[in-house]
Structures are given as C-alpha cells and as structure tokens.
Image (tube, rainbow, N blue to C red):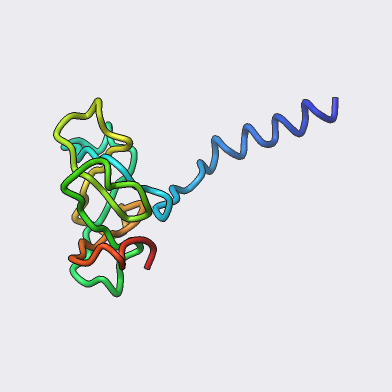
Length: 109
C-alpha cells in the first residue's frame, strides 16, 4: 500500500510541475519550429552573451555538434535531436541563448 501511495505522489507531482529543461545538456541537430506547439523548447535569443543561459556555436557539420552548446541547424525535422521555437518574449522562454563566434566558449554561461 505504501508503494502505491509513493508512486501516486510522484506521478501527480510530475503532472503538476513537469521537469524543467536542462539547456546545458543540449547539443546536436536542431530543427527550428514555426509553431510553439510542436517545439520541444521555447527559446529567447539574447542580444548580449552576458544575459544568456547558454552560449551557442553553430556548427556547419552535424558530426561536430557533439558537446554542450554545439548546435547544427537542420532543415529536416526527422533528423533533429530536438526542436526549438523562438519567442520574442523572454518570460515565455524555457531558456535564453546567444550565438557566439568561438567554439571553445560554447556551453552554459
């Protein structure tokens, strides 16, 4: 009986407050959705790297997008590891990003 109660509490709490995304762990192929409904994450693009949660280096080859903050933008949803939707309102985003020119600084800010 105790196990059922514990399982029920865990299940209800995960429904009420779904787990937050871990933007630091995201890398790989990314598809940019035009609809928020289909996106895995809602993202705000910061103008300054000082305020971004994650610094993104955009790879030109999918094979090199293999570490934190290294993204390869794909035009095919079926080849993407995850999808994002860009919002213009920071308070609606799961996290914020800023594109950088130097690969060695990519990752969590």
